[in-house]
Every structure is written in structure tokens, then in C-alpha cells.
Length: 427
Ligand SMILES: *Cc1c(COP(=O)(O)O)cnc(C)c1O
Image (cartoon, rainbow, N blue to C red):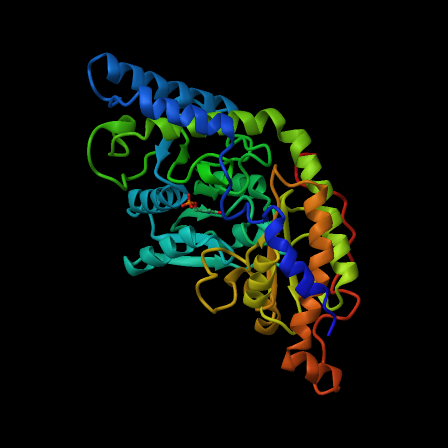
């Protein structure tokens, strides 16, 4: 057995950790945490209070809202602060479905949505709503024609994500939104993964409702946003005080709202160059992994994909064991999505793109970020072939394959022709 891997595991604690899980969460930067702490300390007033401390907090809140609205090209009164992306998804979907149930109880979504959408849909099914789950192709794309075909007279809402959090595929939501608008159906999109990486203009994308979350774009966890088109009425999710124009009870999280606005502003300022930089790193990583590790394929679309996302399947081995070895080598990665990594079921997204469960189990998601440089990619490209080789040496499936008892599902030279055009949807 080659001892190189042992040597690298021994040396890893002396090297900096490599954070490759930006789709799970991101580390707030200095500017954001500095602002956050100063608002927490100096502007603790309740924005609903009628005295100076309250007015100051309200001003910070409204300035944050206006700044975010400006970046999204919408009106400040179309922006609502929530506690997270999950709340925004729940509110948008339950709120719209319940508000329109007099007109119909049919909803449409896709099979590859985040659990914040899928489990919300399941909860509505228990209330008597009927949900159509649209299938995707083998790269995770939704064909807008399937949306058109699924719309019925009693359909009230369609929810399709802008960018998938596991495989990175970017969906044609502008076209889907246009179909919904024509059919007079509300269109919601979970754009949590897209914000900060791609231009997001809810109006141009024909969205009525859009969900966002701070911690995916270098703001803290615990703050989200819902865009709601002016004039659209949906039911409240949180009954309570008169906050957020009476539509979401709960004292506003002023400091986190300010942090969100700052993080969004910073991401917009550097977006074009940063996304191009990440696409360069991403594509170098993808090409090198597929070339250097046999029986490996890229999951998702080759260029309609998030600038920071690479998702691989390595045949004959388990994703969990890849993660453990990578962790001991200094890397934080994910096996699909952070939400499913506590269970042993293969990812619903990988199954939805038609991947056999055997291969879906051996999947790895690498999501880079603004701290990622060439050095981290170089280091990873040394380690990943060693990891996969070692795990295959221990794999009974790989032994069977070598004895000719098992056929490979992914050919040795890679399961797809990697013709990447360096795309990410900005062009
Ligand atoms: C992270 C994520 C969410 C949930 O956001 P939270 O703020 O963690 O609740 C929803 N949708 C997508 C696509 C995500 O990536």
C-alpha cells in the first residue's frame, strides 16, 4: 500500500483548513461582522418604539431595506425581512396557496427543490392541496414546456428554484415565470443559492415571490428575505405585531438586516469579476478530477451551473467515507446536501436526475468561495486521487469489478464529455 496518503494525513493539521462547503454556509467577512457588532451594541432600540433609540433602529432597518431593494431593482415595500430562507419559502408557498384556495388547490413544483420547499408542499398536501412534482432531465434542467403542460384551471402557484443547492444547475426561471404570468398563476422562486453569485432581478425574471437567505452570501445565519410583488396578497405565516407592514409579526432583527444589506452590497460590487474567477477555478477543478480519477462523473449541467459548484460521483465507494478522509486531510466538503448528510438515503436530487442509488451514494459536493485560491485547488487535486484510490482498495464492489463480476456504470475515462464553456448565466 502506498504510504503517501498516511503522510499527508499526518501533515494536514499543520496546514490551514480548506473550506469547500460554501453552499452549506459562508463565513461573514470583517466588514460585515464589524457593522453587525456596532449595530448590536449602539442601536439596540426596538424599531417600533416612539423615541430616539427606536427611530434610530427604524432608520437603520429602512436604510437596509432600501439598499437591498435597490440591488434587486424593486421597491423597498416589496422586501420583507424574515428569520431565514426556510421561513421565506414557507411563507411564500403557504401564504400564496392559502390566500388563493378559493380559486383552486393545485400547486406545481419540481422534484429537485430544497427541503424547505418540498416539505412545505408535503405539509400543504396534508391540508388537502394537490401538488404536481415536475421531473428534470439528467442534468437537472426543468423544461418550461412541462410547466405549461402541468398548469390546470385550479392551479394557483408554481415554485421552481433559480439555482440548485446540490448540483448547481441554473433553471430557466424567466421563461417559467412568463408562462405563469400568462396563465395568471403566482410564481415563486427559491433564489437562496443564486443571490450574490448571479444577477437577480425579480422583475426581469417574472417572479411574484422570491426567497433569499443571508448566510449563503457572507452574512450571518438567522436572517432571510422575501420579495413580494407589490399588490400581491398572501396570508401571514407569523401572526403578531404590526411589524413589516403588518405582514410578518416579530421584532425586526435590525443588526442582521444591516449585515445582510452590507453583505449584498459587497457581493454586487465584486460580482462580475468574482464569479468569473470562481468559474475559472471550478472548471479547472472539474476537468482535473475527471481526468485524474477513473470511473468519475460530473453531476449537473456543464455550464448552466453556479460559479462555485462542482458535484462528482465516484463509483464503487461511499460519500460518507470520502468526507471523513477528506476531513482528516483538512477539507470541509459535503456529500450532496448538508440537510441530507445526517441520513443514509441518497440525495433526492441525484435520484431525480436519474442516477442509480449505487452511484448516488458515492457523491461529493465541492463548493468554493471568495476565500478559495489556486493553492486550495492544487492541494485538493493532489489529495482527491489518493482518497478515492484508498477507498476503492477497501471496496468489495471494486474488487468484484476487477474480477469481472460487476459492470461499471461510469466508464473508466469519465461519464461525460466535459465540454465546459465557462458559463454561469451572467452572459
Ligand atoms: C440554504 C438553503 C435554504 C435554507 O436557507 P436557511 O436560511 O438555511 O433556512 C433554502 N433553499 C436553498 C436553495 C438553500 O440553499
